[in-house]
Length: 291
Ligand SMILES: [Fe+2]
Image (cartoon, rainbow, N blue to C red):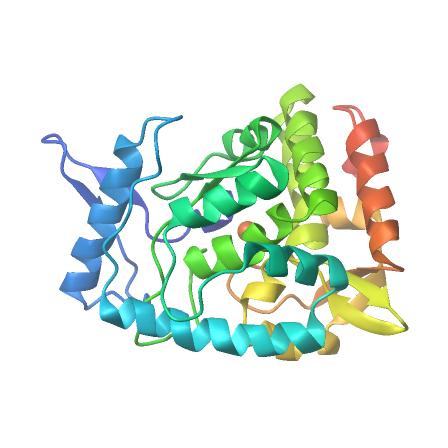
């Protein structure tokens, strides 16, 4: 999770060290004290995490396992119809359980065997430079909570379903993992916040919401699209544009609703080349970023 979640559920620590998560009134968990306490415990464990140590296990509730069973089955069916081949290959390698919510540590171990990446727990908001920069060290900072069970098809913030199903499948694919690593190295060498935000925006349209053509058909490649049951049924209705760095870097994106504009590569290799070139060549002074 990175700054896309700024508006949602900030984690705070009071003077006595007690951790809590602040929910907005329209969050499905706003009236659920048990869920709020559970989320605070998960955030607390992440804040105590020491890099290099094992990722702490979370005691998930039966309701949370049920949410996972429901949504992972729905997503698996939609992936067969809408996901691009590289995502499906990563997903197959990740082989997440369908009967229970996995621990982040389990998913991390599988990802690490596949590509050398690992998950590390994030309590909540991670600064954009920290989040992307850690990809250069093969580390993806992920949340460990899952959405509220009253609205299983909706999450106002990135949760385990997004992180593990979406990004985990990417990180189990060597070609996608190589792009994540390059993204991390690119962000590390950029000095200006504007340039980092522009790179973040290109990433958003390419690997959170990106599409690729396969055999003349539109397929989803982005982790956000592929972790959202609703958006996998809607994306074909968006305005589809060809990849374009200047537009992708400057077009504002929406975190609370469907993306009205999506970008599509001619093929996965085209997406790979496009991002490889952009991430290698972009500098703090790139004129395209000022468009
Ligand atoms: Fe994401």
